[in-house]
Length: 465
Image (cartoon, rainbow, N blue to C red; front, side, top):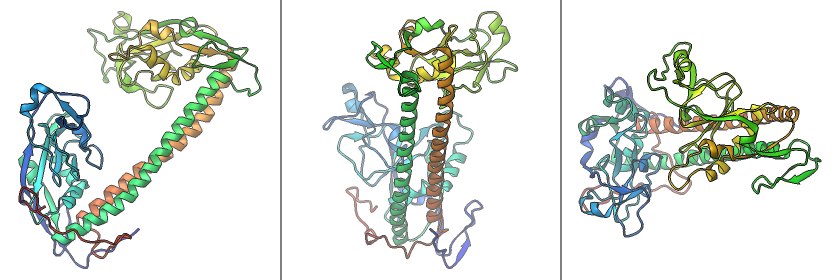
């Protein structure tokens, strides 16, 4: 859909902003901000507060396009007297300290239940009577805002950045009239909602494709490729029936060894080691079953001295601890790994690639075997207790060929859907930027529901928002 331009434009006087509608002006945010409040650091349990119990917001409350006050933690009883800055409707929540891609992230408060407070890493920003909080919220979703935040935080830590209040107040934005701000906000409410619905549909499709992909793998590695094969009870509840000519064995009986990786104490792994050996960590495990290059390497000397462990080509690596417990990868060349990874070395007559496929759909079984009372851990003995259904070596190869072909189709469809989500996000961002900088003229736009411009309203603070 195309939108009209304004009749006349002028030079904004700001190089990166370019031209603006003739009647718009450029101002720093300090001309719109009347108050910035910050909360206090308090001790809190990592579960949401129940009604009537004090909760402190998590920074994740501003990670999506919609502010979510349910993203909070229950304040410990000993710290109840230290909470400050209660959540208030029509304010803008800003993440002042975060990772580079999330510092400056914002959320507009449209609902503010009692008992929800701010931590010290979030601000609550109030605007004056001539500035629409909805319009300014959309400004903070624009590329122009993000680029300014990026510049303001340059030179700070690469992993955790801090946005100062003076820097925030100095950020520039383009200002139309009050009525036009509200018209733009109404327009973006409507148009971004349509885009968000399309994004949600694509994400649902991606999840369905992933589920179907897993189902195809699970069926092939437990039922085989012959739909007419005679079946038998595996004796393992979650495996069910398997082909009568297959064996049902624990991983300990189909592996020469199950080993755990480690971190060299002296010759530390690094991405800069020339001709090093891949040293895998959980972060290297992605959607592909066959592992690509690792982010870090260990030296030949670390391997030779025994300070680093090496696993032969054809090994199956399993993440054995943490949030990604159960992720599986197959190695096509000798490799090393850290202590969060178990390596299964297949025995003779076992196709490691088939084994990797088989284990890739047993995440639930692995998590059940792990110590879920604290943090999930799959040690070597628990790994050996995983049951697998095993056909003859020739049939294992046929199944992997079949699965390579089938999963490639799913992967292509998933990639197309993910690309669609990316393009929709780009379209959303471009539309917001175009609207809040006056690149398009939406003054004549009307929503199908019948659009009425918001009227000014006074809050309990006496500040017109």
